[in-house]
Length: 468
Image 1 (cartoon, rainbow, N blue to C red):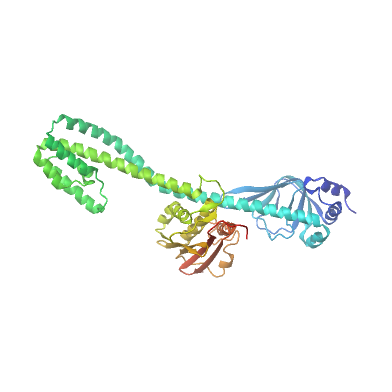
Image 2 (cartoon, helix red, strand yellow; image 1 turned 180 degrees about the vertical axis):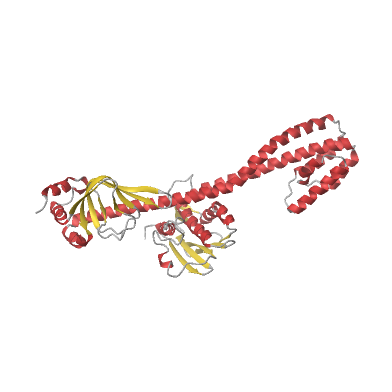
């Protein structure tokens, strides 16, 4: 006998109002009423699900942990349909499905699906729409989580890269304050000395040499130390403070210039002039160091802004592939340095741009290059080439790692499949990479043997007129 009260409960659910009463009766006749308390995990991560659930009352949520901590990605309430759905290829959920409050279901076992499809076509179509909506929500969640993980890698690499120039800026600024005070005192002493015009001209010539930054014949640390020793000896012979040697040695000042100055005036006057020169040289050198460090920070920030397309709308546009790859290499520079890795980029001239969302395309390059860095040994090599082939732009990322075993290659793009140790990979990077590439009418393939693995991405070089 059919439970008419249960049929009425189903008919009253907002999401099922369009389902014919005869189909609702079939569901009640063949289903099983189930109830669980709040906190119950009704579908653990990865465990097979063999039932379709029509939620009569309550609240079901799905929580997924893809390496960045557990996060609620979707939820269902009274009238929603979840669990195993007809035509779905899902075997188990990507996370735990649990109850946030006491919940009642009408459960239909999957063995009844063939009959249900024939007897309940409207309800079956309703479940197919639910399945597509669920897939879209989980796909969007997968992509968002992968973006967050990549953002964490980006932040870690950026922090490492910025630390050195930032520390140099702080250190040089502190020394600059002390140097300015010394330069002020030295300037007053120089002004009080009453030098002749010829001597002032000679001092100015040496100062000009002080301000010239050597751009060639850069000295090794040993050569620089020898130069400092040579100038210190000269200062000692002329009874001038040897502390000035370091500042003077960092310039293009020569011993001949110093001899010329010494021959023009007394020992005391030379000491006053060299104190002023050393203070000026040190101040200028520190200002140059601050400028270089600040420029490096500015370049890194600009690279990150380009990489993330933070100043652009998140919409497809014509994108420069070479620029995106170069910015990706910059943001992964810290990781490459940590492995003493070599990354080469060979780009064919006059490449067409590709139609894509720039930040998502950079996500592709981030995943491929980051995986290659994980795969290579210390001092390994990654070779990236970008070529035009007919109407496509083809990017190849090759590494000299151990390679991918032949039995693994067919599964390499499967969701949640990873060859990395536990906790180091979500198994979503390459799956999302393929999804993004195909979103823009492209393709990705992989070939591997010991010592060489090549991922090959091909993208159309113009805006598609219509979906494939």
